[in-house]
Amino acid sequence: MNPVPDIALQLYPMPGNQARAEALAARLGPAVRTAGLWLHRFPDGESLVRVQPPEVAAALVCTLRDPDALSVPLLMAADTLRELGAARVGLVAPYLAYMRQDRAFEAGQAVSARIYARLLSSHFDWLLTVDPHLHRIDRLERVYTLRSRVVHAAAPLARWIAAEVAEPLLIGPDAESRQWVADVAARVNAPMLVLDKQRHGDLDVSSRLPELSAWAGRTPVLLDDIASSGRTLAVVLEQLRGRGLAPAVCVVTHGLFAGDALQRLREAGAARVACTDSVDPPAGVERIALDEELARGLPELAGLSRESQP
Ligand code: R5P
Image (cartoon, rainbow, N blue to C red):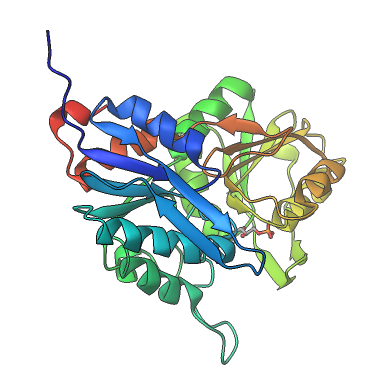
């Protein structure tokens, strides 16, 4: 009989991340276990974090949608684990916030990507994330000083599209999306085009769709890394009307779907919307699971032995 391996890593889910942590632990075997973390909000808005005392190395599991509300308790949890003796403290954040503000677009603006990177880097030893918005900052290491590993959603996105969409035509809504669209298009062997986008405000976006008659009969698949207000995708959907293509599908890596985003996408003509579970997809959005990719990315980063390699 094989002895039960010693525990090597405890995964502490922040509220809302329990299923994510359990799925990861299940893939990594008995040396990786979930542990308790409790968050109390006082009536005045301050937080109190409590953790199950760590026995070995620890990692917090916390996807960073709504980062402002999450970050203070997250950092308190990290420091508490360290004070209680955790050998190392890592962070599994499938969606990494604040990467889009990668420069000061107007004088006096904060470069949030850099500042947030400094904050997380000073509290964690390592970071595992999924396709962060790398654009003007082209590598996470340029701003994050902790050890980091980026896993990619391209393979699961491509598998979903290949299984679910006949004759896809991949459309990237802006220049930034080219990297992801090109990768997925090559995997599903589909034609692609990338549009120019102008953003005039949070909810005000314009772009122009070219002549599409060469693609008649294909299914447009709008692919982007993030859907936040949904306006970037909605403006493309609206222009697809009456162009002789099949009803459009939206596929995104990080489905933030703020406010009325999903309703806007439906009204603009999205027949289906799918996203990865880097952020829990809302009702009506099809889920593309990422736990296999995350589980493959974690062992080396967390210093786990071969037995924990999925
Ligand atoms: C920006 O470059 C990103 O890749 C997305 O296109 C953007 O964040 C989408 O935002 P929204 O859904 O608010 O238009």
